[in-house]
Image 1 (cartoon, rainbow, N blue to C red):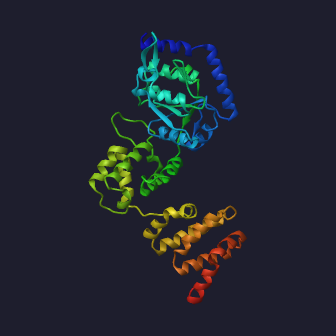
Image 2: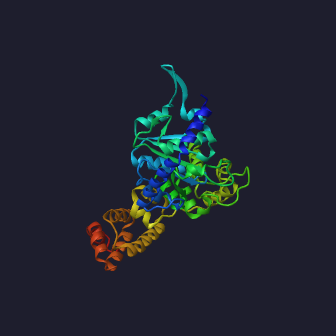
Image 3: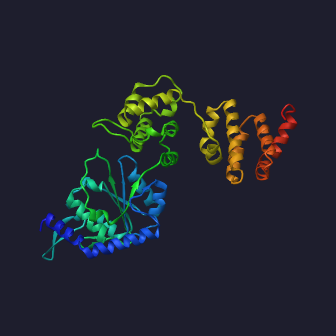
Length: 396
């Protein structure tokens, strides 16, 4: 029996109308249960939270343009669920890579399953099929049986193994038309990551320089090119910015070290152009040359431990005072919901400032007449301010 004959048998089995009806009814049941609609645009945070609610036998398909981080999103989901992830790039696979090779056992020919599929049968894993719509028809048909019947050639998946898939969309990609019957087996979502999604992800890492994060925050349209694409031309996307950052750090050219310098190394321009294109690079280099690091009240309130060294090294007294003014605006707007950790972070920052700024900050807090703020900050500053005033009579 040839691989093609086996694959054809799989296809015929998958097109069983009773199996199709059963799968679609279950799919609809669980979509309604979690109050989600197929085909909706969804940001990453909502997707990860929603996907975790689905039972293991409901497969997930994420659609979206290349470079938005679909693979990384599924890795994050796998980490959150506590499952190992088996990542298969279907565009690089043949049907033999899916169903295994024939072997003769006791005079009977059968197919020995491949190692990654054996693991998915023996233990709970995330089985991730990437580039599903770039796979050959035969490979798609193998994936079809795994998604529909949760088995392949008689080898059943572990009950808790989850099957996820991703496809690239856009006229600039060479993709194959997917069988509508296969698409109906998935909970299908159009992923539309926001700039804030990317910034949140970048902030959690050590390989995305701060100046790159601020560039994307300021010029969000350069995170991902969304217009027409000329063949052979390089355009930015979230993945290409990540690769650029990794390369620059590896080359000991961290952009943070060049921020504010008018003269930039030619290699910095060349490397950037190769990853994000000439237009984005020109804008980024200009941003680097004119860069002045700024900090928000949220930086201090929510993540002071991560920015305190930068604040100490980059801000002069005027800038520190400007930041205190931002903090007061923040406190006035959020005084009802301020947490003890935020009060502690803000207090740590203010204590790093000159004595006069400390006293001024304390006086302004007292003048707000907001009882919660006054009580919270009095614990941190009452004794300190008294000491400053006694030792420095000119400060009031």
